[in-house]
Image (cartoon, rainbow, N blue to C red; front, side, top):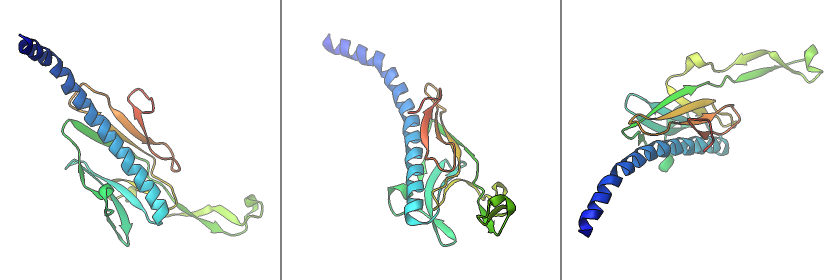
Length: 181
């Protein structure tokens, strides 16, 4: 009789555990995205080289890579692994690429004699020149402002946003109702 009651109890409770594990996957992916972005930003500054968090949406892959001359290679640690998104979790990306400029030095009336004239600045990169889906972390400490949306596509759970609102901020996790996690 005791075994029957325990079996009946587990049969009733098991579906609620299924929903819990599905929503944990979404939260775990959001935490992974935040960890990868934080690592990329801090190591870009400390190593003096650019990093990128690269997304391959077709194959559901994400990887952090570091600039190595003219190419990008993954770091030799867990942060350089090729991560596959779990079933039931989708990711979208909206990036506002950085536009870096080189100031033109010279005397200008509006500089107050500082010699810095930004009116003739040269653009080094613009958003039309991007060659894929990635977030860039520059050695200067600047980051592409971006929103990574982590969606529970299996249903029954929250979506999370991993957000960087300006070039000088780090990424933080925000839930679907706008609260910081």
